[in-house]
Image (cartoon, rainbow, N blue to C red):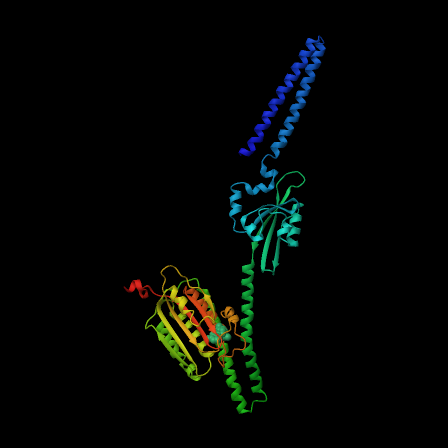
Length: 463
Ligand code: ADP
C-alpha cells in the first residue's frame, strides 16, 4: 500500500507546482502589457482568453495522464514477477510443497518458489526456462501461452542421470489489459516418479507371479500329454512322471500360499501388532517341525540361547519368520552340515551391532530393514547361522526383492519361490523390528531378526 501512495502524492505535488507557475506567468504577461502601455481592452480580453485556453489544455492533459496511471497503478500489474511478492499469495506459493514458477516474455523465469528452485536446481538468478528445463514439449507450451494461446498439460520423462516422470500444468495468466506482452505462463510441476515406479512394480509383480505359476503348469500339461500317449503302458516312466508332477503341484501350492501370505501381510503392515509371543518357544517349535527336512540331508539344527524371549507380536507371523529363515538354511546348506539358531531375550542397540557383525571383516553384510530405535527400546533377537556356501556380496542388496534368487543356487526338489525373504522383511517392518544378513562365501550365512520385546522382558520392569 505505501508503495502505491508514494507516486500518487508526488503527482499531486507536481500538478500544484505547474498551476502556480502558469498563474504567475499569466500575471507577469498582464503586468508587462499594462506597464508598457500596450494594454487595452481587446489586448486584455485576448490575453485572458489565451491563458484560459492554455489552462484548459493543461488540465485535459493532466487528467488523461492521471487516468492512465490509475488504470495500471500497482506494481503487481506493471511487473508480473512481483505477483509472487504479494502477501498472502506470496506466502502461499512459497510454502507449496510442489514446484511453481512464473515465466515471462522471452521465456525468462520471473518468479519461482523454493520447491521449484530445488527441483530444477535454479541458482539465485533464475534466468531462462530453457536453461534449466530442456524439455521441448514444455517450452513449446510455454511459448504458446505467452502468445495468448490456451494452457496445456504436458508430461515428460527422463531416464538419465536419474529416472523421473513429471507432469507440468502450463497455465496462462493475463497480467495487463493492454500492452505488448500481457501474458505470463504459470507452471505447476507434479513429480510422478514414485507413483509411476509403484505402478511398474505392480505390473512386474503380476508378470513375475504369472510366469512363476505358468512354468509348473506347463510342465504338468506336458507330463499329462505324455502319460496319455506313449508312456501309457510304461509303468516305470509313469511313476517317475507322477513324482515330478507331485513336486510341481507342491511348488504351485507353495507359490500361491506365499503370494497370499505376502498380500495379507502388506494389507495390515501399517497396523502395529498387539499380541505377545515367545521367540524361544517359537524357534524350538519350528526346529521340530522342520526336523524331517533336516534329517533328509543329515543336517543338525541346534538351539542355543535364552530360555524365554517375550516379544510384542503376532504369533503366526513370527512363526513364519522362523520357518522361512530355518527352512532356507536347510535348503541352501550341504548335507551333513550344522545350523545354529540362537535367541537373545533382552538386547539394546549396541548388542544388535555386535550380534550382526560376527563373521569378521571379510564378510558382506546388509541391514535389510532398520529397527525403530526410540531411546530405551529393548529387543529380542533370533539369529540363524548356517555353514552353507554363502552369498556373494553383490547379491545381498537384492535378496529381499520378490522372486529374486541367487543365480545357479539349487535348493533341491523343494525349489524356492523367491518370496520367503520378502515376507520376512514385511513382517519385521510391521513389528517395527530389524532384519540383517551377513555372509561369507565358503563359510556360511547368518540371517538375524530383532523384534521389540515386551515391557515385562525389559530390565527396568524386571527390577
Ligand atoms: P526362496 O523361496 O527361493 O528360498 P527366499 O526369498 O527365501 O526365496 O530367498 C531368496 C534367495 O536368497 C534364495 O533363492 C537363495 O538364492 C538366497 N538365500 C536365501 N537364504 C539363503 C541361505 N541361508 N544361504 C544361501 N542363500 C540363501
